[in-house]
Image (cartoon, rainbow over all chains, first blue to last red; front, top):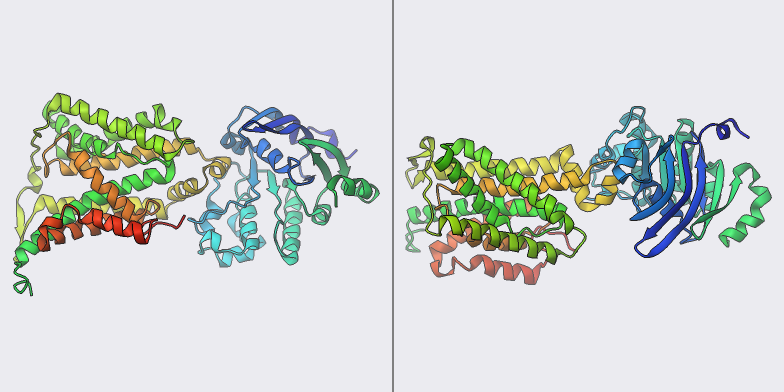
Length: 239
Length: 295
């Protein structure tokens, strides 16, 4: 048992269920994330990984169960109230606003708490964004847009970041860069829940992996025990 | 050159000024419609009725309470804006997830009710509203006579249009507004209170209509139908400019006012339809409007 595991988890998800209209997509998700950890949600397409992030954020149209953050129950809250607790999302589609410049996109999410990164520090992490800060947000390359989507939630003081497939569709060199960034964020003390299809990428950055299937977490594998569980994992992911 | 066409410069300049005045109203009203449509996805058919209400509130403030033009210029848009917020909270907010058509039908019904109420109490003959003393009279510019009040209308609406454009395009609040127009769910997930923003935006949009109504009160008679007559043209302006663009709504308003004025000089019979002809042509060639983004 690590020291972190003995303390109260930062995020505690219990029996989280979620629906899109009539379609029941989450069937009781359970997992914990401790302060400073990077954990992944792995699974096939449609397993419920993105829906879990949207469920934590309160964006799912209907949800039930329990999601506590810093000990506060958020299941009855609106997304904006959940954001105000200190949770921030980087959505799969990135959500860069085309009517805003790069700098306006970066400055958009309001500061929730103290302790966010300064704009200077963010530009040091992502030098491309500094160069292109006057450009229209959607004129950036895919990789730059992804960096912008991550960069803008670092300013807010949120300590828990939900990153939905940040490497999707990006060139290997950019994926590597994002991997370095996540490492840097971990050492800054950010807590990260990462949804990934890119298993090798996930293995390079995370402390623990949760396997999601049919709207449930069916297995938890610490990164250290990954090699021993490779066959099992291949079975889960169908790769 | 003017003599060749048989038109005196006085007539031309006079009609251009009239066009600029009309264009000022088109610009302020279509700006309000564009702002509301952008964030609420609602085609606000009640806009003309709320413009009329702005004029009536100014008239009532003066007639019943002795409150003059300058205070009315602030109070009347506020009152109309608060009335709009009540409409938004009690009715419009239930329609955001539905098709445009429902918002259009609801606001059209509201427009009929508001106009009907005023017609019932005040008739349709129109009520006079004096030009404020400071703005009576005019300037002789040599080639034409410029009434002070008309110059004021052009200047005031230009300032309001520029101020609104600046607020939306250049400020942090405007960035929230633009972002929420694109993706309200994500903006909410960043911790911004989008429903509050929507409510205030509707209030602001209809307050613009109320402001235009106060500006119009001393020029046109204060009349329950004044909005219904104007709003049809304003909708044509919005269609020509394209719903998506703030600057587009403003420029199209002014330009079409001027085009209408010019038509009145060169082909008076066409002045009532010229905007609709332009609308038809724009719809054929660029259906998303001159400043609109292709869908």
